[in-house]
Every structure is written in C-alpha cells, then in structure tokens.
Image (cartoon, rainbow, N blue to C red):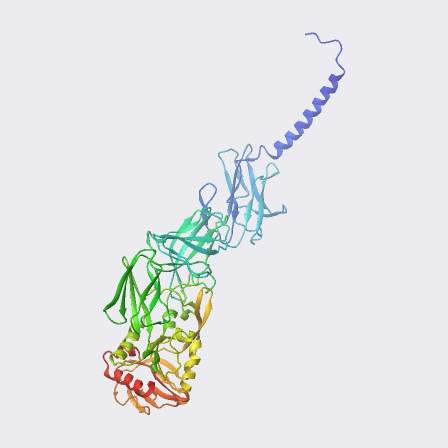
Length: 621
C-alpha cells in the first residue's frame, strides 16, 4: 500500500496524545495491581460484624452457623503470590491497636487456601478495646506491602440490652380490664394477652412467663418462654407447655438479644422490688368473685362481681358454716350478680361454672331491734383482703399487706373463703344458738362509717383474727373503751398491725401495714407457746368471767401483757403466763383471750362456751 506523500499536520499530535494516555494508564494500572490484584481476595468480611468481648453468647452468624460473638474472624485467600501474612486491627483514627490471632504465618496462594484470623477485642497490651468500629490492615512480608481490607469492619460494644415491658393488654370474650392501674385479667381459650415492649431488638425476642408466688426471696417462677417475631405483636395465649395456665397472677417479661448476641432480660432478677415492674402483670382467671367488704341490711340485695370468662354460672347461698341451701339460681354470665341476704348474719356464696367453683363471704347487718342492739360484732374484712394473694396493681407480683404493699379492697378472693372464716362463723353460730341479740358489721365498714356504728353500743365483740386493723378504727376503739365501752377480743396474732384505708389509684385501698408495739388497748402480745401438758386455768377473777369455767382445752396460747401490769382477771398456765386477761381501761373494760381458734372451740368445749357467756353477760352488756 502506498502511503500518502504528505501526512496531515494533526497526526503527530494525535499520536503523541495517545502515547501520553497509554503511559498514564499504565502507571495507574501498575499502581492498582501493586496494591490490589495479586494480593487478597475472597470477599473478606468480619464474622460476626458486632462483638461483645465480655457478655456475648453463641448465636447464628451471617452464614447461619452458630458461633461465639465474643470474638470475630476475618477470612481471605492470597490470589497470586504466597507470603507471610499479618493482619492488624486499626481503630477509628487509623492507628494500629492489635494484631489478629493467626498472624505471622506463611500462606500459600490460591482460592482453595482460605486463611482465617481472629480477634478477641483485646488491645496489644491485653486491655479491652474501647467500644467503637475497627478495621483491618493486611501486611505481606515478602512483598513488603500493606493492604487495607476494604468493606470489612467490626463493631465492639459492651453492656446488655435493657428491655422494658410497658404494658400488658388483654382482648377477647374472656378478657377483663378494670380501672386504670389495675391488673388485666383473662381466661385462656377465650382471650389472649399482648405484651408491649419498649426496646430495640436486632437478633431475637423471647417472652418470659413468670408465675407470681408468695415467696419473698424468689417471688417469680419461670413457667414458660417462647420466641416471637420482632415485627409482630407478642401474644401469650395463656398456655403453659400446651395446657391452660393455672389460675393466678403472672408477670410477662422478655429476653432480648441484640446484634452482638448479648441478651438482657426484664425483669433482670427473679426477686424484683415492688413497684419496679409496672404494667407487666396479668391475672389468669377461670372463675372468681369479688364480694363487698361492707354489710348490706338484712333483706337487701348484695352485689357481687363475678368473672366467669363470659360463661354462664350457677350459684348457691348458704349460712356460713351450714350445709343447707337458702337460695340458688343461674346467671347467663353477667359481670355482676345480686343476691338477697334474708336476715342478719354471715353467709357464703358459692359460684360454679363448668368444673370451676369458688366461694366468698357476704355479711348482713341487723334491722329493727338488732340494729340498736347493745353489742356490735365486728368481722375482720380487711384481713380477708390483706392476705388475699393476688396482683392488683399490674406489677406482676403478689400484693398483700404482709408484703408491705398497698392492696385494693375491690379485688376477687382468689382462694375463695378466707382461712379464718370457719372460726368466725362458729362464734356467730354459738351466739345464735344462745339467742344473743347483736348487730353485725365489718372493720372496713366501721372505719368508713358505712352501716352500723359504735354510737349507742355498750360492747364490741371482735370476731376472728384482726391481723390488720384499719388505722382509722384503732383510735376509735380505744376511745370507745375509755369512754365506758367494753371490748372482747378472742384470737391470736390479732390487733398488732394497722393499715390505713385510702383512695388508691384504681379505687379504695389499704396499706402499707404498720406494726404496733401494743394493741389499741395497750396490751402486748407475746409469741405463740405450747402448754406442754399444763392446763390453762383461772388465777384471778375480779370481773367474774371465770365463775363457771374451770379449764380451757388448748394446747397452745399467746401470752398477753396488760398495760401497766394491771389485771382484774387472769387465766393461764401460770400467773406469769396469762392466756386470758381482763382489765379496766378508763371508764371501760377490755377482755382478751390469746386462744387459737376460739370460735371453733365453742363447738365442743363447755368451758369456752361458759367464758363467752360470762363475758357477754357481765362485760359486753
């Protein structure tokens, strides 16, 4: 081919430009190959990408393999040249702070010769690395090169997640939501409970179901746990190991695992302080009843709140301590039922729904002559509720006066009839059998000024153990005696603590309890002691209350010490160990008997009957 005789003047300039571009391109390609290409490959990543060197556990990594998150691992291969490899750890300022485990060894090149290096979050001097993000630098000894590992980093963090259950809500036909601040209640199978969490969760969430108990050192028992989708509501269906949870109070907690496989729990301990778990409580109930703590007038209707989970129920009304049924009926499942109390006295209402049954006490005060009777009998309704083992403030813990809590006065009696009701009913039956005329009320009603009052009375008979006496009533009883009245208290562990009646967050409440060095009449109560075969007999009888009683059949007694040592009547195993005392206080008289289950002893003991008869005749009237 024949070239033209004359080249265009632009050709040399173009060729020169191409030569310059080729030179520059070759320079940059050489630099790129020098830094990148015959060095490392294999998409190196820190695995796991977040670690907690102190508290992390074992979780699935990005590949689904279970590994410890207390250290991280970096893997890659040398693409073309074998070499001695060292991997260093750089802090956020680009400073070398540590060398990864596995460094300093000879590694052959090839994609099938992966090398792994580990770092446990420790600095070169062995100290823990500060929280933050760290990167990696690869050094190749034979090539005298260093390569930053682009796209790979690890975050070091400490501490644990702090999940918080902010509320538990219930929904469904068997759900019951009370006033604000009260514990929601539901029936498994008819309703569910939803746990609301205030937390971030990266790897997983488990709901922890604790059953609340009365053990002060370990009040919570873990009975169920299950994982939930963090993006969906956390719902408990009320089942434990596939079966409906027993009726009771529960705390719904959570275990949250963050990106470093570190788990934090709510509550952090199984003995949380009262008030530290607000909103985490829920009650499981299949059938419960909430009786009024004040009497209704004989012949009137008593309103009882019933929770049957919406199921129909049957009911029976009996005189307390008697088997005969006075009234019976059915209810389609209403939340409140009404039952007529025909005459003065203590009653038991039994409610049945399916296989579930519960009983609660009801009280009727007198009308006519009974309403103006000189003797007022008082029942310990505050102690019924004070010992009632149920959560009523949505904290997930049992709230009783014994636990130092404030308790609601409007909550179901979860164990049915109070423990001392049989003794209280037996004393009333003894009065009725002897045709005694009296009026009847409760300590809560008397303290609130509802129903019968102390005005116009000559005597007060305290029927049962007043473990907690309303603070408002304690002073009134003392003033009543000093003003000329008389009081008979026949129970152990009674009148030694008070609890003020208050307006609680969700209604009438009482507490916390306060111990008394002496009861409202100045009597000090000793420990319960065994008679060890000795007889409880009278030693002094200035009141005439032992004139027909000889020996009291009790194997234990509570020693009583009258105020100032003054005593007008005394019976015990010895004069220095009085079990029954009588004394004057101001213008009035007090008789106290530290005799366990005195009411039940009236069924068989003639001497107990005679003591009650004499106290009634010469003191109370």
